[in-house]
Length: 369
Image 1 (cartoon, rainbow, N blue to C red):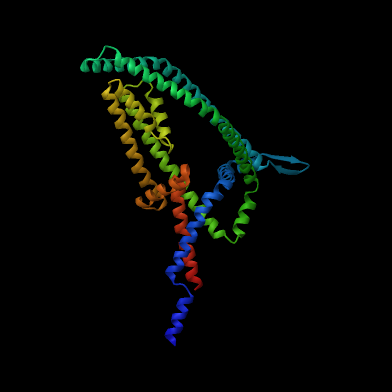
Image 2 (tube, helix red, strand yellow):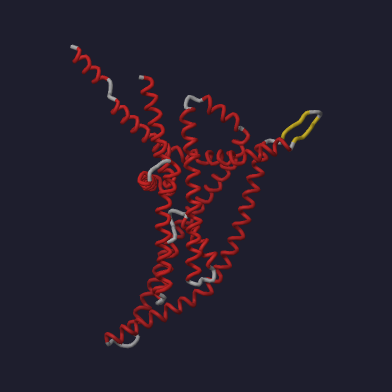
């Protein structure tokens, strides 16, 4: 009878392994659903809150210094107003820097357009010379292969123009819609930052009094830790990649080696693009005109930058957030597959949140039992 009762009891209550499996499954599903469906809705407010945290020390200092006395009573300037002014000031400085950079890029673009006919002429000479060699080797009528190649290039350009116009017309409205949405989101972020500054103390009191304060603190600490690790690792990788690109541009005697190196380094920080977006087509073009040395240097720069990013990204992110290199690589890959552009940071963050919550809830379950 004792054996039957113990067996019946074990049949009614799931074992520890099954409980932990259910906790892991539920936590993983909750984190995925939160990132997939909830995060896009609260992202502007979250960004606004982060900006409010960054602006709060200086805004609070200025608020207490800028006091007005009316009929013997002192009034402080609202911290939200000061934070809004600071935010607009920072945006103005960034806008001025971007404007100067855009002017510089336009000047470089004009020089590029001046140089473009020279490159096209070199490519035409290279293509015509090879066509004449083929004609001579195969005993064909002089000029037939060159004429055929010219017709093929003309039809290819004409086909690209014909296909590009409907694409541009069809996507023009979507571009306008995206710009309008970006403007609305920016306005929401700005207002959220001001209101968060004004209501910071109330928000903290609500968080501390909430039944989920442990989870809020856990998520907040992990967000701060992962965010710092991400910005630190990307900053170091950007610095190294930019230095490598500037050095490579100097080796090939590019007159704009500083601007080109900085531009390619910034492009490498974008997951969709990378250094290969510029260096690979550039190497192919130099190879097409017969410049083997420059093509090899450009290919070597791309390979070095690629492996530097892959190695440092995994090691630095994992070392700073508490994940092994294999866990970091796997979480980054899964994050990119599930969440796209922002999966690089959401993947490791999601894995850390799952580990922390599973550990906390497992300990809580064991304490209750």
